[in-house]
Image (cartoon, rainbow, N blue to C red; front, side, top):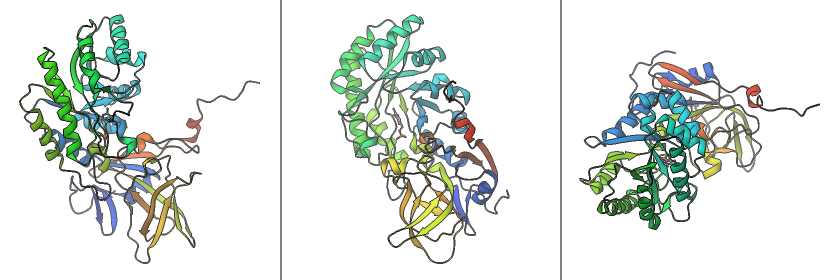
Length: 425
Ligand SMILES: *Cc1c(COP(=O)(O)O)cnc(C)c1O
C-alpha cells in the first residue's frame, strides 16, 4: 500500500484523494483487496485524537476517563486506549477478561450493569478493580457477602437514577424513573448509610449515566446538579466520596446533529463541581470511537424497480444493527466516485428480514461490484454484531499511518457451529 502525497490529518482521517476514499495513508480499495468485505476499518489517529481531546478537557483536575468498552470491545481498540492511560467501564466479566488481555489495568476499571453475577463479582474482586457501580440494594447485599467470603473489601459507588430526560432515542435513554437502571434518587441516601455500616464494603463514589447520543448540555447538567446535591448531603453526614463519575452519553455527528465541543460540554460540568475535592470520572463510549471507524462493503446486486431501487451489499443488519434497531442514520458514500446518473437506493443486506437495511433513499451513482463505506460505524457496530443467518462476522482492520493491521480475522463458518452437537445415535 502506497502512501499518498499529503500527510494524513488526524482530525480528518477519512479523506478523498483523486476521487478515492482513504483512511490515513491507506486506500479502502487496498483494504478490500487484501482483507475482503464486509470489513470494519478504524483509524488509530482518529481514536487517539478523540481520547486526547477528552482527556485534555479535564487537565488540571484529578480525573480518569473510563472508556465504555461495550461501544467497541475489540482488543486492538482497547490496546490503543490503554496505552494512552484510559480506564475502562465494563459491564461483564467477559469485558474484564478483554481489558486484561489487551494490556489494560484492572485498577482503572469500573464495573457497571444491573445484573452482576456472583462469579463476575469474584473475578473483579480478585483482579482488584477500581470500583463496582452498584445498581440495587440486592446487589449491595450480594457484593458484601461475596467480598466477605474472599476476605476483601469491595470498593463501591452507587449509580443513582436522577430522573432526567436526555431527549434521545427511548431505547438509549437510561436515566428516567421508568428505566431499569440505577437506584431511585429518593432511596440513595438510605442505601449510602446502609453501605457505610457494612464491613466488606468501602464506599468510594457516586455515579450516574442518563443515556446515549446526548447532544444537549442542559439535561446532562440537570443530572450533575442532582448528583452534586446528594454528594453534599452525604458530606454533611461525614461520608466523603473519593470520586464522582458522570457516565458517558456524549453525542456525535452522524448526519446533522450539532453536539457541543467536548471541551465546552465538560467545562459546564467542571464549573458545577467547582472546588469540591474529588476525582472526576467519565465513561464515554460512542464519543471516542464512533467517528473513528467505518464499515466497508461491496455492492453485490442492483435491482431497479418501479417503486424502489435496491443496492444489495455484502454487509447486513447482523454486521451493523443500528439502522434496524434504532432507525439510526449512517452516511453512506462510494469509495470511488462514479461519474453519471444517480438514483435513489435502498441500501440493504442479504439477511432475510425487511428490517435489514443500512440506509434508505440514498442518492448515489452505483454499479455492481462497487465498494461503499458506511461512515461513523466505530461505535455499537462490531460489538453488537451477530451471526444471524449463519453469517461469519466481519474482519476488522486498524489503520495506523501507512500500515493496515488485521486486528480481527473474518470468522470462519465452521467456528460458528463448532460448539454444537448433533443428537446421539
Ligand atoms: C453504555 C454506557 C456508557 C457509554 O455510553 P456512550 O453513549 O457510548 O458514551 C457509559 N456508562 C454506562 C453505565 C453505560 O451503560
